[in-house]
Length: 237
Image (tube, rainbow, N blue to C red; front, side, top):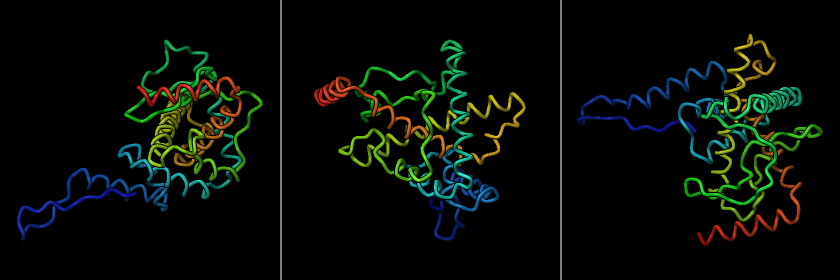
């Protein structure tokens, strides 16, 4: 998960010189060691500045999830914060939302697929508002959710599924960023901010995976048929 680099030598007798960007990454990795010794946690943090490959980011989440202490208490705080942000976005309205970050919307009725960077992405791949009775998953389900196919499609290739996970995780980095900004504007004493950032991002991702899984279970049979028709059409475009 750590960045790779090759020493730059001008001649056989020259001392190795590292690419400045690689050297900066190594310094950042070492600095993050003062926050956490676990490389998987450092990988999640450094991904904000230097994106990891799809599969390696997912593996970092898988390794970090079982190490989260007080998991239920932290998930409850993260769930409450995500619900608050969804309500905030609904009150603010689309005209005043920050365009660079994902927004929340009610469960869409339309299903199907779209193309993004040559990767088919399900049209339900957007943050959805959790209905009031819905609760985040129990700790025992977390690893299963991180390992499961993101779109609930077992036939999707592993590389494509990792790309879908990468997109979903990216939405949670942005969601966490917005929560940090809004909370710090209001004193920055909220319990959410006391949770380590890498824990927050993993928990937001697990919550989103569970919410999408629940949403898929609510599709009507007609919506499922429509989704299948649209997916078949995609292969002919």
